[in-house]
Length: 442
Image 1 (cartoon, rainbow, N blue to C red):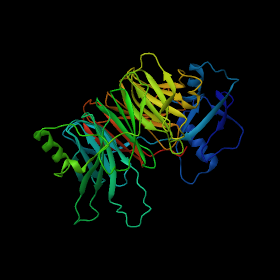
Image 2 (image 1 turned 90 degrees about the vertical axis):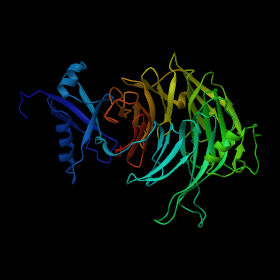
Image 3 (image 1 turned 45 degrees about the horizontal axis):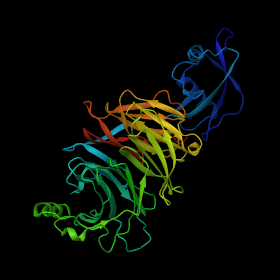
Image 4 (image 1 turned 180 degrees about the horizontal axis):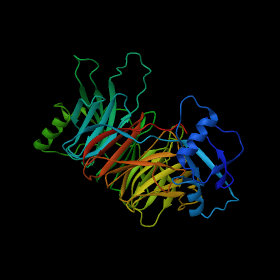
């Protein structure tokens, strides 16, 4: 290197399986991400090139080293610590599946299928070839949420094509449905509603299952959260209100022509009360911490719950931040809450009992973020917003999204996203889209 070339003193760190020897490097100040990535690959003599990104003091390097030092007031004598991480390739669109009405909830959890729930009251299953495998009218009002209920496959004779889903709706109810998908070209799909969940007196905003499939949580605009087991009762636990013949026919249609009395009316095991305005979303803690639940609402709070005892254990209060969605990262340490103030705020839930209002940062959006989906690694998250843009963030560098894409050709609101198995399902006013998005290892 010529002595007249400006340079920066750098040490490299990483949590990837590709560490460099611990030493200082004199790097030309004009080098950018591409040059640094080439250096890592050539120094390690990697058989297959791996693109890397670089973090400087918690910020992704998007300029040259010299420009970054100038912008941040870093002198030539200071040694920079650069953490390199595997780059994430920009998501690629796989499919676009139009719907007649808004898609309010999506799931990519079931292998080989996508599940969508819509404002027209239908739940639909699409296979990976975009073919409609099954659809059913689940509610007479818009569906707000759908989730797959995990089932134990311990029985050898259990039909692997049979699945349980739970739905919630603006019709004030939620329900559990058993669906049998075609196992071969000659078989047909079947559907039966097992039970309806009755508690709420206002639209049910969300429904979620724990990882073992033994319990569900529902949230509602009536400020209540319901805890339910998934055992089908032998008889109705809630008395049926008198209905006229027109309503009875409507219910019979929803149940595939069967008598409505075959669908059991189930009561909650526990009612969680603490929110003072509509509850937007409630989720269980991650596997191993399922006795804790997390909720958010229009009362500008995030609340932690002891599910077993039915009590609110912590309340994180923010000033004028009505929350629309909440999700946990994969290690369960951070709750992310989307708000109408155009931010997704991060809260360390391990400190929630001692600090009720401190956030660990925010992801800034140009429009209201409506939905969140976290990845298998604790620092990656997708958000969807009302400007129709889906953004991928690295929580180690929260100033800007790593990458983003626009769903649909026109600006239409994104209402739901689900990131699983290397795919991102996007639902909203424009229907349903699927994008390929492979997670980085670290």
